[in-house]
Amino acid sequence: MARVPDLPCAGTCGKLLWRSSTSLPEGQAMCRECRRNQPVKHGTQQGYGHRGCRCAECRAWNAFAQREYEKRRAAGVYETRPCADADCDRTAHARGMCKMHYRRWAREQGMINSPSDKWSDVRRSNSHARRARMGGAVNGDKVLTADLIARDGLDCSACGKPIATDQAWPHPLSLSIDHTTPVSRGGAHSLDNTTLMHLRCNISKGARVSGDQAEHQAATAGP
Image 1 (cartoon, rainbow, N blue to C red):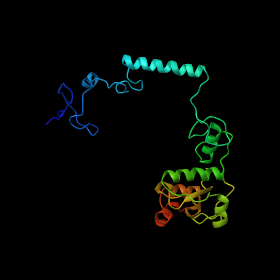
Image 2 (cartoon, helix red, strand yellow):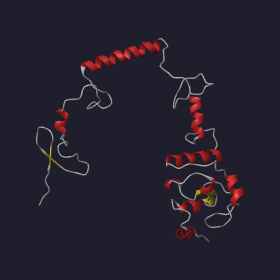
Image 3 (cartoon, rainbow, N blue to C red):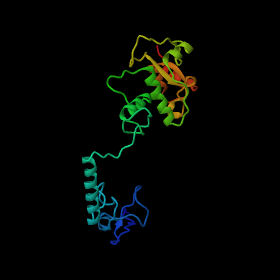
Image 4 (tube, rainbow, N blue to C red):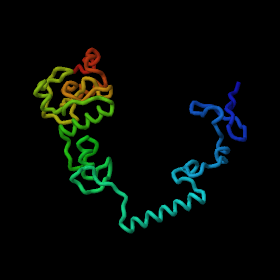
């Protein structure tokens, strides 16, 4: 038996529509013609994309508001807030801070970088910490490579072989920092949750917890 449309249009036409996983509930689904004939709610963007209501009243109000805005700009009157830094007299740009303080804060969080910035242990630690916070974890102190080497030495925590410090990323044997409980699983970026690994061992471990050694050692076994 051939399939036929079975979802009635909620408009005035009564036409049957095709039902799908994305269909609105019965009584709300409407065909394109009925949607076009629906009255637009005054003062909203419904039916007009991002332009808003285009009735005569709203057009007049928008034109008046634009003229007043242009007058304020021509008179040098700007509706701005001061920077949240007490010693700064610049105007706020984002998060209540001026552009200089916002960029400084964003770099500290590992969110942005400039072409002149070089990747460092501090920036790497901040970037991992931000990812962990977004997952709801509580981070510890900054995780620096020198601290991990002083604590664990230069042996890979997965295969046990020495890590070559003269190899730079993305060489398979270059040094990388692994999270025992991955950040993607809610792990924190802290010294207690990090170890040193070869890059290839870290990639093959993926998002597994380091305690699950059987599968991980089979995946990372090399010549």
